[in-house]
Amino acid sequence: MASVDSRLGEECTFKSAVVVDVASVTDDSLNDLKEAVEHRKDIESGDAVDDTCENLSVALAMFLLVVDMVGTGVLSIPNAFATLGWIPGHLTLLLCWVLSMCAGFLLWRLRYQKYEGVHSYPELFNGAFGKKGLVFARFNTYPLLFLYSAAFSYTQAQAWSALFSGSTVSLTEWMVIAGFVSLVVLQLRSFKAMAFTSVIAIATIIIPVVISFFVIASMVKDPVAYPVGQRVLFSYYGTSDCVIAAMDILYAFAGAVVFLEIMSAMKFIKNFPYSLVFSQTFAYLFYATTGSVVYGLAGDATWLVSPFTNSLQPGAAAIVADVCVVIHAAIAIIVTGQVLISGVQRAAEPFVKRIVFGKDNGPYKVAKLTSLKPAALLWWFLWALIVVVLETLVNTVIPSFKIYLALISSLIASQTMMLWPAGIDIYAFARERKGKEHLFTALSVVIIMFGLTALILGLYGDIAGIIRN
Image (cartoon, rainbow, N blue to C red):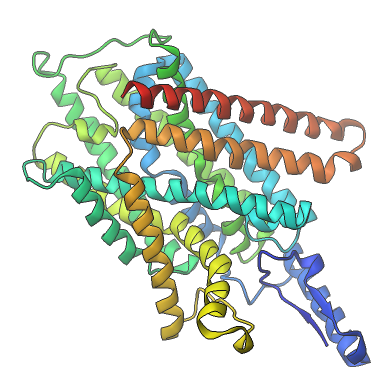
């Protein structure tokens, strides 16, 4: 028999997903195989719809990308500007926007033209480098996703703490509460369900930022209680402080880690660039506006902390801002959290089932994310619970929010946004290019250099900051 799995697992790409039992090949089975292959080509070219994917529209994919990008990272932008100054702050922000756009286009081209069936970084590595690439990507992608997802719970816990600042509940206890809320929210498993809730997530990060503009403008009118700091073109802070600030900006664009999952859930993958351009440009303009307004109002004031919404003076506006941040952090975790839990489930669940139920009752498969069967829901809850508990334990030992974001940036964004897309682009296309096409290879080399710089300097700044704290 011949079969084509259009929703490929991480063990194969589409080109290797065709399994043929030679002894049972018939003319009918060969015809079915040809039709399946042609249908897959039509799906990839946009001439047909993949009924097995979630068929996200350009708009829904755009909302997912926006909520994935415009999240907790924006809350650290003003503090980063306060450290870097006007010119380095805006140049770093612009560079990160360009690099994020390049990552998106490189991944889309790899997915659309070279490795048609991949849905994640591990699958992409498997398609490019085989089993060793798959193992490498798994051991790198999932820990990186883990830290990225944990940051949302960390932000939520800080917002809870600020909201009830007069209570006796410690930040560690709020982290446990945030973990429980995250566990509940993460029971939303499908991208389509997430896309509709993403509208709420976007609104609940824009609202507190806008509120903060007016509150801070009012606060600085009292220079005794809230003195305005310096506003400079170039930073006068130390190297490690500037590196951490730059990594905080880079973190705001770390959503590239789930680009493949989102584009693979689209109705027509060829339309992904439209969602990419709008989402990344919206994020860039929102970040630039937030950094410019708050830095212009307060400078590097000593009372301005990260996340900057925790700097607001007590009052109704601060309460509304904190409530919005809690809601946003709780909802925004679902994109990264879903990808993380789904990956852990695919890797570990079949192994666990073989131990519990025995090898003879296999093979064991993982239920689709759209399945509502009790067993599927219970298995998902189990893996979500394990992930959330581990994230909560990690969050309790992080000394500083901005150092946390910088650590994630240096580890995650340097690889997923720069090193991996550019490196695989060179591996997949460099030998085929001719003439001016080699400029694309040169661009990938430049991106790799930026990635190595971010990785090395970022880790240096993070370690120095952790030691100092």
